[in-house]
Length: 299
Image 1 (cartoon, rainbow, N blue to C red):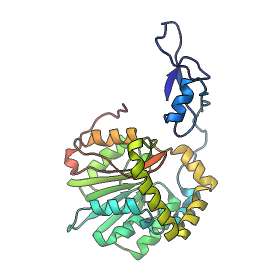
Image 2: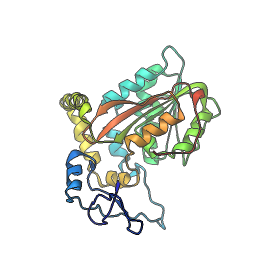
Image 3: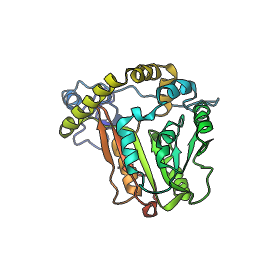
Image 4: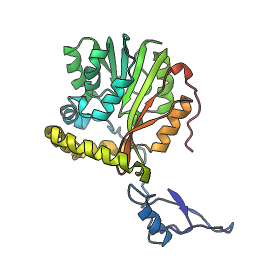
């Protein structure tokens, strides 16, 4: 997260002499740039986080939701439990229009099912065979919906055949530039991309009122939907969930926001829910005819 004059403990580099080394220095914890961590750095009490090494595996590793597919499907059978996210998506769908919607990272198909009153048809794609088995049960009862497995940034759809593409809590898993090129191919020129995802960033002082409102809604939801939160706890404490997150870490706010806003100039990401260490980012691309391709950059 920063550079240090010592490898094992943070020490402010100052004006280094040319022959003295600098060390890339990672701080432990989710909030390494908070006030407490900053103070510990200044007084020399911040030890370095151990380096982690990720090497290619000789055998294929399943990094999808397959191991927790049934638990996930049971937990999110009704996607409207994600109250803020669902309300934002529904509000950003074009009104009074016949819509064909693509759900990228469709999971168990519950989002398209919930949006059916506003759709003419929907297509969902995902990499997880286990989740798609659950989604296809939704399609059996709703013939306007169809679901397909994909590998990599290739979509089984013709050019300019989709009005809206949605990525709900899945954009972090995608290979951004190749998938965005493919999305621009299948979306109509006046179509749009809607992205809602969780990103990491410590809460700022100005965000505490929004944090308190988010916490209040969360408390109300826990009282209103105790069964959902019981299932959610089972899901996130399952070893398969930790395994999946190991290979699919949450992206930072700055990384995702900068990327999306650079590809669609003039469009701004919104924050619809704030936590102590994370928040929910929402982005409406507007007409994708304004898309500006470019190389991935992270300032």
